[in-house]
Image (cartoon, rainbow, N blue to C red):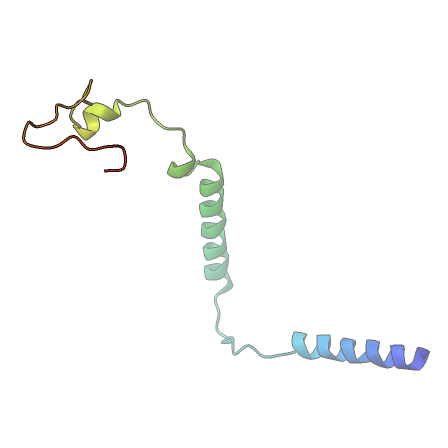
Length: 92
């Protein structure tokens, strides 16, 4: 039983070693200064995003929606029934 467990652990260890030892076709002529510059730019971008609140999370501005939408005023009272129509019940 212990030998089986040890063999399983050795298999897992071998899989990890193979994964870490893989070649990812990365060219040898990579400029590390350029990569560090890109990393710094990404970090600055992430800092900017974390410091600012996205527009969809900002509180609504107090605006007058009625004047913005230019909607007509709501009717008050009951509408008159035309003389040539019969009055309908609540079911139509």
